[in-house]
Image (cartoon, rainbow, N blue to C red; front, side):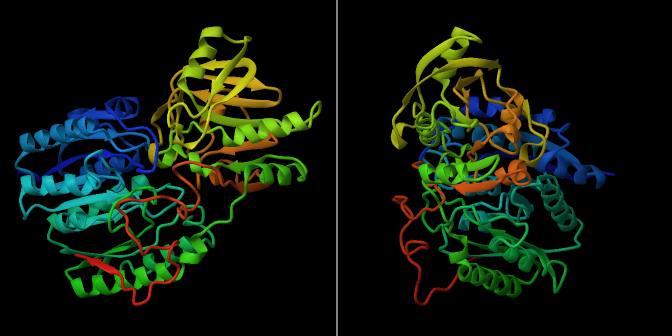
Length: 505
């Protein structure tokens, strides 16, 4: 008996056109850059979920290339060309295949290509032909493009934010492909988008956040009236691509009209909730003043504008500068121990050169992406050195080794600054813990993520303040400058007369 062969591989990351550092091949090498059979032992994340289902179905896997890394600026043209060329070459070598599984993100870009996933899926379709089913999984922060919908048979997005369902989403995507190959279903897909471009502060899929309510509304349709899958999409707002929007993807069993109707209904509901997605924000000075009036800690200062998980460099010192100024004004007893992360390879190098116990003065911050501020001069004591390696304990990188590069803790009075060489994705507080810093004992903790701070600090936080600071991942895109994305779009345009969702099939 000849078993069916499934090609599996992808280029997985999230990109930012407003700032950040361009992504090169070395970025992927620091996270996951696996080829051929080296992919097969993966047992976590979206790839692990896919492999589990394919094994259970006794299908043969043709592993291609799995390149995954932390978000940043667009991939360099050379990086994308090399990865794409290798993935496609491995696909050609694997032919014939009966299906293709692509664990993608959906918001990747290269210097010369704004829609990386659309470009890649189109190239794969040209190789395998029109009859071979292609199923891709996406982050729910994808930019769903016409090319992606046109050339894939099914797009299935994650259901949780903070992202905790990468494995099960891999399973869902693989099961769709298995059922398609078995002739049990004929997936028929439609996407609908409205021009809502908002950040992720109020986009949790838990509790009573507006995005959570819409997700529950969408998921209630699965398994009824031929609906195979529903996905709600909050587009990555820091891309600069024409026709961006948020909305929904619906897959039915051979019923395009129903898919279009339900996707349109969900997109219209998305437009109706747009105002609830815009957050209130504070200046660092105001948040720190309010935090000092609160008994105990930790008080979480969310500097979302410098989120490495959204593609920022992580090198902002806007909040650190405010904390230092407040501490100076309250000497000699500031009573405000604080934890602050900063990506600065030069300063990290100085700390390693001088060694633990040394007192140093150095410029800090805004060295990688200087568009957002000026370095500050700090003087402190090197209290910890680290090679920067740690292990993720959940989320999309569950079990993966993170690598901050040579890192140090520089203690300035009662403020502990974690200085790293590389930016890394924040899931919980693994980075702080890896260098012996305990957030529960601090008065202030700076978190540079618009959502995952809830995982680490939600149960212990005495207060949480969303900060308005310069950076490429701001809490609102009201002040962002786009060149490709054209108006009208919310929040710049609060009303758009005659608006109807854009339908992709």
